[in-house]
Length: 214
Image (cartoon, rainbow, N blue to C red; front, side, top):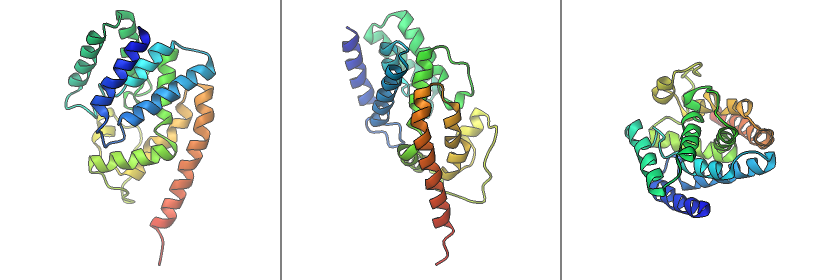
């Protein structure tokens, strides 16, 4: 029964997100799912069924992907009803999804499952994939690749983080380079180290090429 629910959810999420061009597509979801299950196995912690469903569904109510916040949560609730998932599992998954977002701030996470899914989502935001996703999202949003005249923003509200003027390169300094120190599990921290260093090297090369004098 659990595997059937996972298979149905996989198809549902694929249908919802397979055409996304902002870096929140099906392939992102699948990577987060695989990373989360890997972390759970390495740590020997967490309910893998809850982890997998939460990882699969974590972007369905994301306000970046819905016209209204309530619209996304409504889609999620309707899917749970169709799946006939028990109320305890629904509550656990919704708690995870509601607390793992970077834009939600440093909320106290409700469970080890939330820590694992958050780590997996953040790992997919850094490294080579993170670099690609950053420029994909910036282009989709109509954001400049880089503007050296813009300041690096600190201590932003959620509204400022979402709507304030910035650039794709600024996003590394405003969020991505901070993620390594915000992870929960030892497994995620080990994976993050190499990915973080790769981003640092990329930014060094980017700055060198940006300032080139021919």
